[in-house]
Length: 138
Image 1 (spheres, helix red, strand yellow):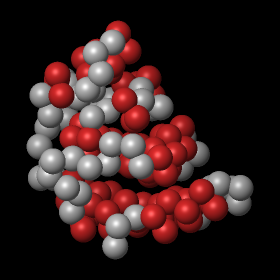
Image 2 (cartoon, helix red, strand yellow):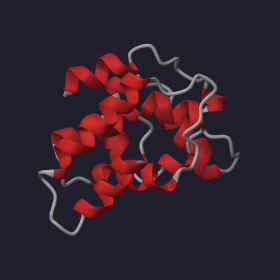
Image 3 (cartoon, rainbow, N blue to C red):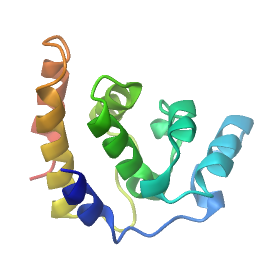
C-alpha cells in the first residue's frame, strides 16, 4: 500500500510556498511556512499532527502534493486524527481539482487506502468511508 501511494503521487509538482494556502491569514501563512520546507513524503509527524485538520485550508495543488503525508500517516495508525481528517476532507468535495487533475492511479491509491483502513476502524465510521469510496472518480 505504501509503495502504491508513493508511486501514484511521485510526479506531483511541489507548490511554491505562497501557493500552499490560497487565503492570506496568520493560520494559513503558518501552515504554508510549516509545510513548505518538507517533501510530502518526509513531513515530520509533529508538523502533520499540528496541521492534521488543515486539509481544507490547502490549495488544490498543495492538497494533491501533500496528500501522501496524510495517507501514509493514517496508514501507519488508522485510528489517528489523520484518518478522520482525510475521510472528512474527501467527503467535503472542497479543493480537489488541481490544474493537473488527479490521475486514475492516484484515485485508485486513495480508494485502496480507504478499503484498507475501513477494516481497522469501528463500525460507526465505516459508512462514512463507504460513502466517500462511492463518490470517488472511476
